[in-house]
Length: 352
Image 1 (tube, rainbow, N blue to C red):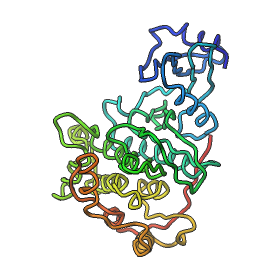
Image 2: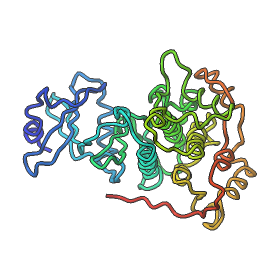
Image 3: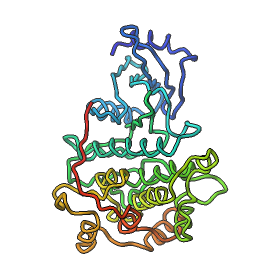
Image 4: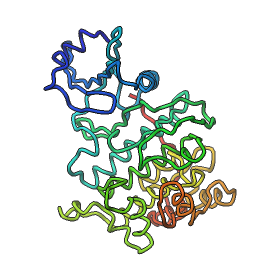
């Protein structure tokens, strides 16, 4: 995309067009002269040390097409000048900025994000690890659909490959413990980040807040006391919104099992999509579509693939992050599902 076109769209990068300021630079709203299309432009100065992240974002997002990913329209690099990344404009900002979302909105947005991550993990020619799943990277379009953005830390890997990293990247509160302790990066790190996001969206709290218990610790304590339904954002109750206790408990348990400190105990993204939809669904090739989740989980437990861990959170997180408490297993999540038996169906990834 030509520099002149981007400059004209943003009125010469006018301060009145600034809609955000991040670690890598400012973000401007713009309108393309041809067609009047609204765009968002991330401007990264040459003095910034984020060149590696910029190139990663261009290489990754530029080739990915999915309705739940923020689209990269183009980019520009001036000689000895700024990097300019041009995205689809998201009218409703990010999830963290929204003052209030209904329960229905929250679940729909979580479904959108999960579908986007599933595409990254399974729906493309290579596996894409986002590595920075968090609320501020979930943007909302005109229809309040959730789209995952900011691929500056993303990496491509062959399917079935476990990557190693020489540096710890991510955001405190969303960072999977195995990245810190072993340097191993798998699709489980995105599942972990989504688990924390689920808990954050349900409760309206940040993962780490000064003067308060860590969010996961609070959720674990609520589960121990049988008060998971009380974890819902109090603003929902204050507004008189009818939120079923069973539904809150189901989603919180899913968030906790996604954020399990043992990566082998976490569900896959395909399972997460099913569980967010309240279905006892399954994995293609692992079980017959007619089998329910209980049979599938029993099989996984017997083979040791899904380890029933109750004390792992306390032992692993107390050493790495100071978290305490017991932790639910996938079996606990299944128990919180509706007693109505559901069948396993294929999750379709829709490209746009």
